Image (cartoon, rainbow, N blue to C red; front, top):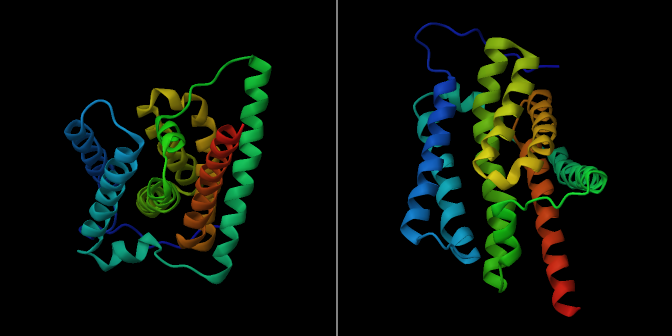
Length: 238
């Protein structure tokens, strides 16, 4: 099932792939500038107090700025929610459990010690109530918001309108997973993120809004954060 989108007319002000690229570049640049300003040895506090907010809010701001000039773009983003979108939290948590078990099985079969993503390492090192709250806000709210706007709000809609359902779902999911290659330790997570991207893209197309994929994404991330905090607490007690 797909959301009906109007034909692409010459001279109109609908989203283009270049808009998604620009929004991503703005966020990436904001993250790079803050990391350079803070120095090479970033602490967990600096990552979640400065870098993550800078990157995510810059991306959100770029999309908002480009959407402000066109009612077509604002409508196409699907910035709507419905009460049943809350089921996305459970769906996301279930995805996290299932895919984590799949990774654990692969790791056990291959007998390897997988590298840990930089963002996960930073979250694991967060100490104190404020830092943990910032991890929850950054990983559980800001990151899903910026990534859903970018990949399911802009890129997915462009691909859906131009190339159809399959290219939209699999292309946007590949882009979503692929940007994580900027973290060399995220290689093992790429297939998982690709699967998550497919689920989120299908939700966005089926419902025609970002509420469901945003909450699914948030549930996925929040369960991961909660698991890190539980493991950290058990380690401290043990």
